[in-house]
Image (tube, rainbow over all chains, first blue to last red; front, side):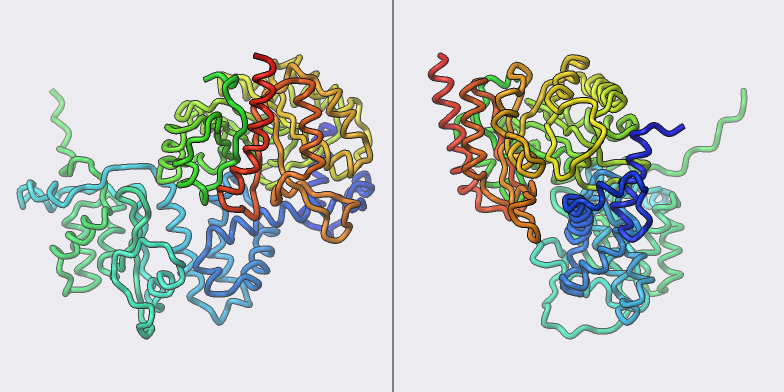
Length: 271
Length: 280
């Protein structure tokens, strides 16, 4: 049986989040007091402020009024589950994808994904990025069977139809972090783009990454050896310069400093 | 670290990190919401480490939800304990309120009726928290906006009973007293005068604003304005009776420049220094 306190809390939460729903009869006297709106406002404002802080590129693209209206709808439907509001809004990109007023802004979903990647990279565990020289010492024949661990902060995605990376980078505000030089006055070319976010040390960094590079990292993330990852990259784009791709990934700090390990040796025969 | 050397501190926001790091005011300390630092790694923790290397830091939680009819989230407690171990806070505090319920977090400090049942539950939750953190925590008096029926206890007796049952201390937020007194119609002075002196580990001062629709009839504990003169007067009345206690100026919204916060803080610092000198 529910305790009196639990019963009160069930009713209070319902009254906070769904103002039009039937309020529990024994809470009516509370909800009708003017002070109840302070709680309603504070809870909703807390959620919206958190989404606004966590999705700055979306905010800049759609403007504050549009953003806060959309965020309020999302917050009511999916209030935070975690008490760390800096992590709130994992489902916001998906919400934007299926949000009818955003139907004409199909790129919002991808831009929101990159905002989310930034948050995830920002709070990921610390790890020493694999230095480019670490692979140089490996004999060439062993390189292909090496499995590289991704850095905990590395996040990447390829967006086939939209220049999501450029849109995101131009709207991420004044934050420094872009590795690529980009003049925001350049005309936007409507083509597919990918991005890689990393945090080798200190702040989050980002760089453009093509479809082959993303396929390469997908294979690495699945625990497959470098030879397989290279195969995926070439399957994606036969003209991929693997050496230069590898150099760029290492430079960005996409991998973690664990000794490059070849495939595990076969189990010994039982004695 | 002992709290006896602390005078007045400031709530710390990321916008003020650089200025805070460089500041060398005697007796200065900083308070943060631990929720913003319960992460695996990255620059946030590095910032907090850097501040901690220069100044005492206290952790003021907003989401343990001690007044929910459920035990505090074990994952949260674990992360909080790890953070506490990392930065060795000079104080850890939480609120007499609830905010997480059945898997949903409601970012506010929600009210409840002070029943016998609630007392038992909250005392259990405080004890569990103190066990997990291996230290005594301070519990803050809430701000009230609603008249709730069914209280078995007065607020001060309820808080005092919690200290008796769990050994916890109290954090007296003077602005909360003023705002609640105005909203519910009781005497803030009488509340301040009756508050159990020996349990007060920390005092909070903050700003409030009138509700945009109802004006002075409903004050909101908004933390977005300087401490009001009436709250300063209550504070002086309090410390004249109980003596110097670590005192924090809280500001969460409409942040002024750091120097302005520091000027407000020096008002409390000067008062505490005078009290300490008088007692020495």
